[in-house]
Image 1 (cartoon, rainbow, N blue to C red):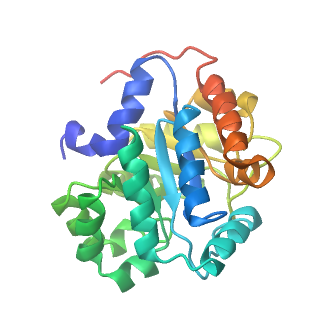
Image 2: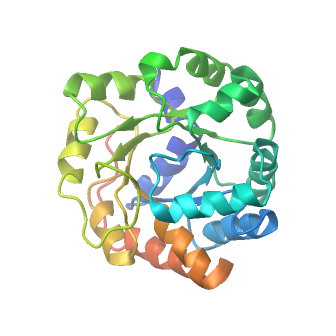
Length: 274
């Protein structure tokens, strides 16, 4: 796979930020929370606040990898009647709002139920950038990999501190867009202090790939974002945005995005050698 192809949609946006001497900011919110329209407004607020890439969560009935904050939000979205087609329409509206890559983060079961190639075709047709699939590993993802390649969608797989070097190499080789380094073992959620496992995980990942490495480890403020931005290509924030939406609506989301956006710009970085 050529580097240009491997960068895909989100990777191109992340490298653009890196070429400006900073890390990219990736913001997550689930579709349909607190309502369908309110969720769209909140996602637009992420863009207005400075996010370079968006992740839209597809609410699922058994979110075993999510922390309590995101679980609660997805339960509210599902109780409001949100379905996969509503997630797609959310993507379409947000993708049309600004030139920012919009990915969906989803458990694999809803994509299988929808139909893998059908989902890829429909998703690409509305301007979607790709999928982050936390419970799908490349060894078991042949159908998705083929569909994503056919429709030029990003394939973002995860690595963790427990991944062997061989597993990291295999996973990154299957990625398009960026590699998601989840530096905290266990469920997601904002944390008071950064994980010490993150920098070595990023270093191990960068040793075997030239595509961007994004880090998700519970960042919730500008100081934490600045710390992660010192070694990662992208800083991924989810639970903190959900809490900001709960507490302050879309205005709260934008305010936090602005703080985090300032954080990833605080420490100048060298441009990426390619």
